[in-house]
Length: 122
Image (cartoon, rainbow, N blue to C red; front, top):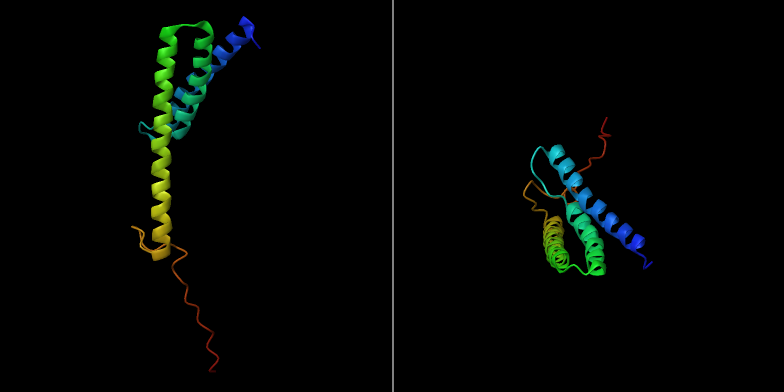
């Protein structure tokens, strides 16, 4: 896989994946009726950027290499931020589930259902 056609295929694949991220963002924003950036946007950015960076390295284009390389740093950093936020939320939910003090009331599993035996006095 060292021929020019193979490298062009890698470049076009990267560009396709990179472009798909905008469609994903657009669809997510339309669904929420607000401007949102879903996590899949960053994963598609990273995957597409990786392919485009590989192609840029093959072509030896320093402008393209610097541009894609800088983008890769940004995509990885955003995924790290998203991951950290999810871990914090998970830890908060786990602590709240044990104590039963979620902001919207106790955790459903923390609430015990009181069951009464049927009245057999008659």
